[in-house]
Image 1 (cartoon, rainbow, N blue to C red):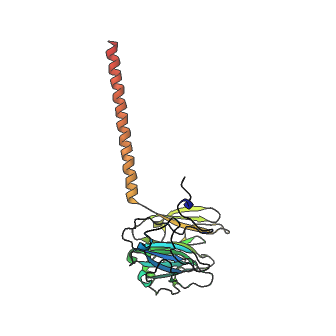
Image 2 (tube, one colour):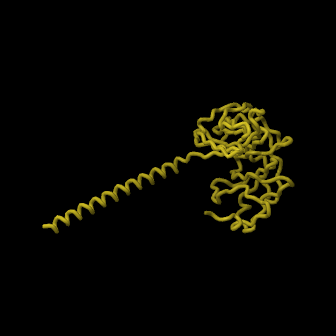
Image 3 (cartoon, one colour):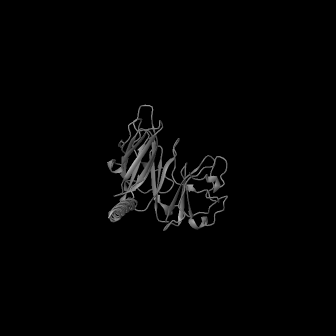
Length: 272
């Protein structure tokens, strides 16, 4: 059933959870934060070692802005930020100096009117990484991350998709590595859902519209998207467990057969 988050963290009125990270972040030493309006901040992980039940200030928020993404990084990652109006900016994590918890942060991307961030991600190795984007009218595509040239932090970014009335705005995105596979899930505003293999989504250039990944009626739009990656280790564990269960069932059957044979043998002896 689960427990309400208020049992663990005292939230203020209208405050919500922005991100959840596991406590054991092996190889990670910073938290990189990104807000809805493109402000970014990097803070050393050690500053969050002793957290009270009432919580600690992670970032000072400007009026009208909200913290949306918290990324665990190693201090040498690349950061990619994607916006609703089809812009993306990529820069080294080191372009943002480490700041204290109470700092407000600095500009990560300069946004145009009506724009806001829809995705932020850290990249370990851009040479083998791709960016998946999905648009609100059901189009999507993959593009190699290296097509998004480095820019200085705070720039306007480069085009991530050719947005038109046909495509609609960007809904979201996800960084994937070469060789990884899994499933893309899209859910529409009218409650329709689709699931498709990531390997079925073609690679397209940065400034293109992509292909149809979800067919919608004229009044519907994609509301959200998500990716579930394959986990070979988990799949192998399930197969091993199934095999152990099968072997156990076979052994149980053999035990029952031996019991029946013994009972039959005893019955014959008693009859004599």
